[in-house]
Image (cartoon, rainbow, N blue to C red):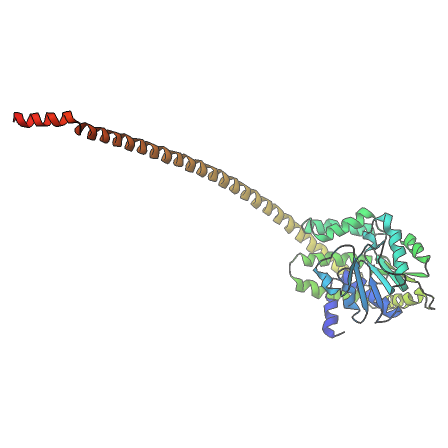
Length: 366
């Protein structure tokens, strides 16, 4: 992977980078760089960018956005009934998908993950652990206030909250029927929430460059240290084969590096202070802009109503003028007809034989 490729990945939103980087690290630590990988629910194909040498098949339940151009092999499939043979892939990865599965289908979804995973499976999502639901509710409130209510993020968070976050212990027990499982915390909750607010605050400015530069800084500085509890999401690493490596032995070095990372104790207090002041100011501006926009909209509606009324009056005047022109034309035609009739009568009188005799007698009398 070139330096430009690495930089492009680092510029991705930190929440996106964290889960795909974790998946890539797990695949490299278990099945190797050229593994056959299923990215279940990863329609956009982002995992391929993190694992350029792997054979990545991506699935989605429906045709995704234009991002799917990144997916060299895209299969439309229901995660609870996959169209693949048993053990079809070296590793099955599903990232932030389980929480979007209706609760009644989650057990079947996890069973399918285990069925098609020939060696390893990694299930990552925001589970129902302390603080996660509160974070989603608070983030949704902020995003809805800061942006239009049809922003896709709001619909995503609506499913998190509406479906309910998956149960971590129940999901682990379900996977454990197929082999040993080890949990991996990802996205330390306090930093994750502050980072998400900062991301959307910068996004609202409408300039991609500041967003990407800040994301690059966060990803370089905090990715490794963010594999710590309490976390926004957890990964569940399952081994489905008979190989000797234990999932806990794969996870342990990652957690040790996170604990030893220089950024492990960073709590982003300064960011929260600056962000709080900025958010207060930006929210006030947003509300003022909203009031101003509402007033402008009302004024435009009044102008439109006046224009419609003026147009109606103009149409009525035009119709009256047209009726007057038609009446004038009809009167002129009637007058002309009377004139023509009178002229014809005059000509008939003049041409009558008696009129000729009278004219002859007047000449003789002279």
